[in-house]
Length: 115
Length: 111
Image (tube, rainbow over all chains, first blue to last red; front, top):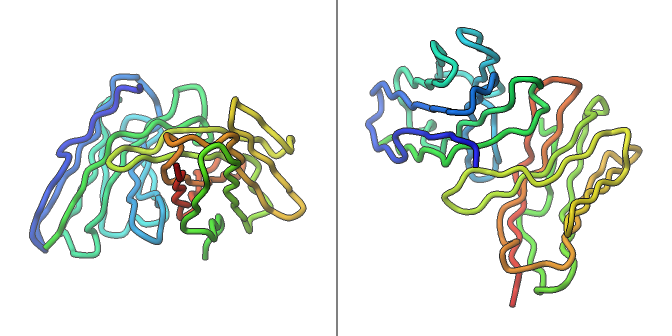
């Protein structure tokens, strides 16, 4: 299994509160991704990173920001959480040599509930 | 506007029989297709992929078929086993662009 951890694994927060989710990898992979999974929507890309300090938006990036100051860590921040951001969040990584079409390895997920 | 469509939210198949999961796509520029499998409370795991230069790729019990003219791909699992019960996501990408996932199909393998 690829070395990917996500923290926290579960979080309950209130509307308007800032929330940061962390993804940590031990594989030295170049690409890192944040997805959300919702019933009826499958997996949707929020943001991704193609290197330290290099990030780009996915299809559902509104209300989210990311940062990558080290190869191994990719942070997802909800500046002011809303109930529509209640979801399961997955981090994924892919290998150094390829682009986004390289096999992605997923973390275990973070279940976020915004009340 | 969904570019990758999995029109069957769920599918039940008897153990030992063939499971066929279908996926349609709308973007004719997609040239790489993947299937991921997901168990509850776990992250998705890569299962099998196919490039648009092929029409079939096989890996053990899993075979993916690609019909470019119909913009359709399918995943065949033969024989189906209890451990195959999971959600299966179809995904596609255009050149080196991001991967687009479908909504998933929940497969139930019946004893």
